[in-house]
Image (cartoon, rainbow, N blue to C red; front, side):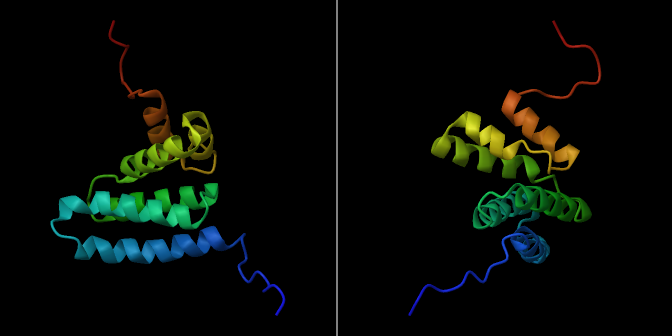
Length: 133
């Protein structure tokens, strides 16, 4: 037999993974006990989905948005910082910190999620007033 055709539409893959992930996230919110563990579990699940999507920037953005929204709706802490830290740590160990930053800090992310990435990359926290001297 000859080679099998590629049956995966790579352009719809991030959306398909995002839809799968959103359903899994909603199920986990009700299943994980105690509830304070939910954000870490969501971050780990989102990281797995991003890996399955080959670190596609759209998949990263979609998964980050879905876990942020799911956690917000359940009145839980934002799991996006944990997700981005997992991704950055894995990528930095694998390909180095500069390339890791290029993969994660992408315009496809919602601005609130890009802010999280920038804080991780530059260890900067947002301040409302002047910087302390």
